[in-house]
Length: 329
Image 1: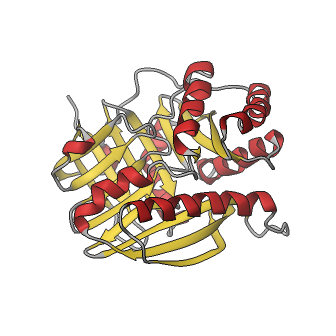
Image 2: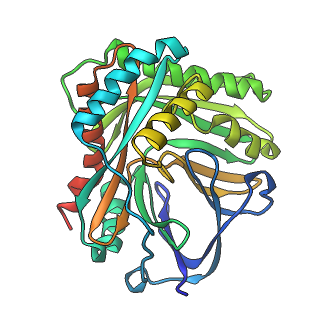
């Protein structure tokens, strides 16, 4: 049995490459420090146990046991229109409807993809993970879920999307999305006893070929609260919806049952976890490599102001974070 691979690079830090093994664990029983991955639905959790440094070029990649299901643009637009009809009756103000885009990819370029992402996106968290448990995933995420350094905590609200250097003004829909996410995070922090929060934003934050509205939130925290805060924040409305339970139920009904695809690691969390130093990112701008295909996971944020055609176009723009790098390999 070949080892699992972990390669990652935080913004401004050196690349770390290790072989070892990812092990499933119950998040409520997490009592070790290490690199962790959690899926979107909060049902799968993995802890990496390193054994040695690794030469990424020589590593044999693991492949998933099945191909993810994709849907056509026609189906995406029809489901998007249906969501806009049913969301008000369910009390849902915002919901993220995702899809999977399939493109050709030479798996022998996977290591080069990781290395090129590191060079192209210096402000993103870039990773490559490979295991028999979940196959091979690569990503370059701009969004911090939770960062804790001793008694200082930080998170961000990242919602609202447009093309980089666009002449478009931010509209009501984008500011509304941003407010939903920010309000949710503040409320969750308050519910965990964090009442004094320093806020900066919203401001325009570039992420590859697109830009987002972003609000930074800083606060004092007891490091023992880390696990509770992860559960409180994940998933935020930036990847799920408002209110969270109703949004999760609807996403599961549409994506899992009707469209027959699982977000899996997409829009879950990924990064280092410990009592005094935690840096977890939301797993965005990512893809799963299977044989000669790359399956890109992307989503659009639906509110009452949404147009399914525009949301489809937004998912296309988000996919270009990776596909424009594929063209360079």
